[in-house]
Length: 215
Image (spheres, one colour):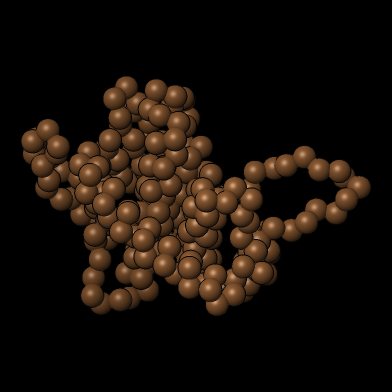
């Protein structure tokens, strides 16, 4: 599959331009806004050879050892874009390319930026029992931190969601809770994160068709 990033005409009040993402896979060809903004000067064209042996160019985000505020912002965008692509990849593998309908890419990006738990029917007379992720969202809402830090917390939230799904493969009733976050639980999450990183690197090595490279 191939992802390509480009610059849209949308500019924020700091002069940063919005990144646009394009997905091409077989008959699927969709483009959508990422809602991620970067300084255009932090983008460059890079030569590469496609999986079909064709020479081409792609737009990539560049970095610098001099960590100015703008460079740090670009680094944060790189991490968010990388996580966004993984999120889309995982969902695409679940539904299959033949089931990708109109507007699918835009919906995936929206779900990535605004994660929500599946709704369940319950008796309105009974108060809703807050889940671990409900409490996480409340904490994040009340926490007075920069948007960049909030985005980092959201990335970690998605990691914890994937950890919960991983645990549910062995125990369908497993739910992440404050009770499970004891010493052993935290150590197990740390081990999972290490394994997940290796799996992600392996998937990227196998997925030769990906066009976007996050340096």
